[in-house]
Amino acid sequence: MIKLNLSGSFGELRSNHFHTGLDFKTNQKENLKVYAAADGYISRIKISSFGYGKAIYVTHPNGYTTVYGHLNQGSSKIQDYIKMSHYKEKAFEIELFLKPDELVVKQGEMIALSGNSGGSGGPHLHFEIRDTKSEKPINPLLFGFDLMINDTSEPVVSTLMAYPVGENSVVNKSQEPLAINFTKQPDGTFLADKVLVSGAVGFGINAYDMFDFNYNKNGIYHVQSFLNGQQSFNYQFNTFAFDESRYINALIDFSRFRKTGVRIQRLFMSNPYPLSIVKTDKNNGIIGVKPNINNTYRIEVRDFNNNKVVINIPIQYTPLAAETPSKIVKTPYFLKANNDNMYKKDNISVFVEAGTFYEDFYLNFDVKEDTLTFQDGSVPVHKNFKISIDNNSFSEDLKKKTFIVSIDGKRKSYNATKVSDSTFTTWTKNLGKFYLAQDTIAPKIRAINISEGKWMNTQNTIDFNISDDFSGIDSYNGSINGNWILFDYDYKKARITHEFDKTLLQDGRNEFKLEVIDNVGNSTIFETHFFRSNK
View (spheres, helix red, strand yellow):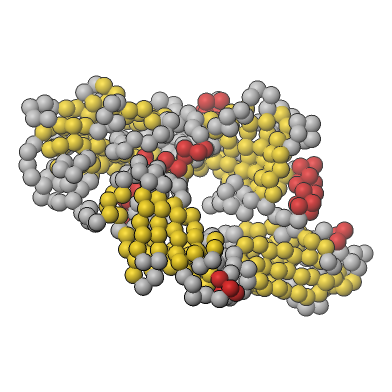
């Protein structure tokens, strides 16, 4: 047993999503025992290279389901079930849905060992509580976990931003967003410098919370803003739906995040978006400033234990012209987020369904030398849009190796591509430059601990590094003596590992084969034999 210590909180801002549970530290170790939170049955097991990695779901009779993610393996009876399923499906990535009487567990029963699988950035346990019927994640602190985690300090607001809203708005002589200074007052609240506005303004903050005896900067629980005493903007992380989690990219200043890595949470909506945790006034948190009327804006940030920080912001009208003009580049293409949009030039077309983007913007669209430019990664994308490229110059064999590649900065990305006659089509959330490319180079296999004719009595595993330079790895399959074997894939290390199953080994010589296939069908086969004594 170790003391509960958090490295991640519920609702914390992550890449393209809000965090759906609590991350418990495991002292930078793997294989710590994980116990069932309450009586129930294992209803789902998902093994994936990414995301939660190896995850177990326990459904309880009280209407809730608990989730345990980034595991190393299940406990003995559960791991036997998982292993049997791997070999039945002949796949590492599996998803199993179990009946209530298959794997029953009791409160406090060990169900797994902690790990670092999937998208984990280090050893820890991801823990969730979900409403079983709706599958919505719920903040575990609402179930008494707050009593086990000390938190006596107030949240920290590190940055306060003001945003001119509307083409003609000016804030402190600027049409660009700008930081506002604020200082602590004798009563413990903070007072911001006066904000001078012509037109309309919205505000945003960068904030975090810290628990006692913990240096992690965790997410904040509750944010409220008030205009002249009336609530303007409010959100609180108690629960939300998985399919609305990507609206994090509408909540934050996404462009600034891409440039600086800092997530400013905007306390207004220039174009309303359906994120259920957000409540606004009729102006969606935007403050229209008029002559002869002084306004006071207040931001309150709370943690779950009701520790609170307050910032008061005086706002005043001023007719002064902008000294810092807007950096927005106006192009011939103004994309309206709430409309369907179609763009076509030469042999390339792009279809954008309504709701693909969060806000209207001037789009950088062009086609030159068979290369499409479609904006860049500074704009957040909510759902896939369609790109089609016509090209009849490829042979049938080369078509199979051809796909649409995208480039954002220096990063190249493979986009799954379908071909019909001479038209190549992909649905993607990537932005940047796009063109047709071929991958004719097979994946690479590097043996780590196996070689021709090696005696492997003292080894428990076979390990390989596998990689592909362009389209990426689609699948891999290994066998010993003609029988499929399980390889555990760790994408962070580009490594696959097989743990020997003695029932598949022969006494003496054993034949081994590994095939790795990339996303366009190029394959590499590694074959050898090794020796092992089963005596």
